[in-house]
Length: 405
Image (tube, rainbow, N blue to C red; front, side, top):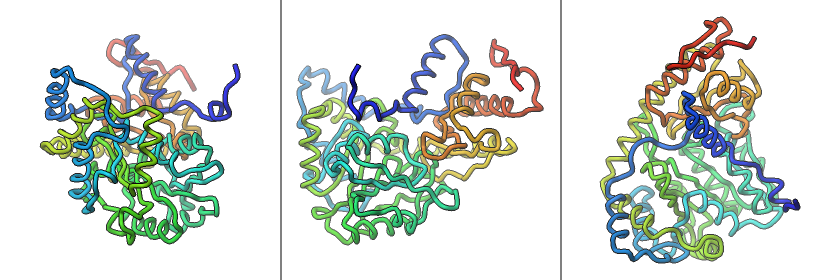
């Protein structure tokens, strides 16, 4: 079979592959525990369900405009003013099939073959592939000190004549790191001084812990929104636990937003009006669900920190937000893919290899699960990694055997 260069250069999403493998094992009755997922377990807002039901019962579910329904755009405008302190208009907003599509059509609208996009390490698994899909080159920047926070000077040193954009995700998937105000201010200043696009992937911006407050990148910008190359991407998948609704958005200058809408119109047309109306209701409705989810995730983070701290050799930086802990397991195996496979095969625990995020030797462990699953999953991991542990471990009706050296 003849495939394109793009098709041959793009790999399968590691996280989606693990989700499918988990479902397969679960379907076979295996007592597998998923500590790798990025999907909250809480229910989505009732206001969203009620709005979807209301529209569906009319039987009038038709095409939506390619760039989104005006009522949802207006809700995003209100959201932007409330949480970012910035006044936007519907012409500054595009509604997409999740924040992922918003990022993708933005990259397609700004990148030419050979352009470069700079982003910090660790990074979300899809960033390099999304840039590659545009014929451009991903430029990951790892901190020279081996940590999880590259310095502004390190980001700047990666810029070349081919650089078109910088892409920042804060709080960060997979590390949970929330970049400081000084860092965000520095990136905004750097992009504006070099005439670069800045894509802020803010999908976790309200899921932050320890009484932190969201940081608005707009407060550091010296350029009016309608002339700016600053693009803010967000959505409802994470903070509202509405992963299956597949609605995200981008806020940017109207010329860019129009170009993104044109691209999206030929890709997928407009997203489901049922889902859009549901999201509008969630944005305008009671916001207690976001706070409740955040408190639950923070509690689970604290639980995981304590449990991983009991495993000699594991190093973990305290996450500031998101659904994840990104722990250094290199004392056990510097090959994170091999280690993740080992834990799945021998302990029936799903984790995500750090190499998929640009840092081998690490594992991403999710805080989305129940406290019971977290305790049980890390209990199994600790048993599997302890050379002096017992020869077997009882897991429900199944006995796991230490049949390796």
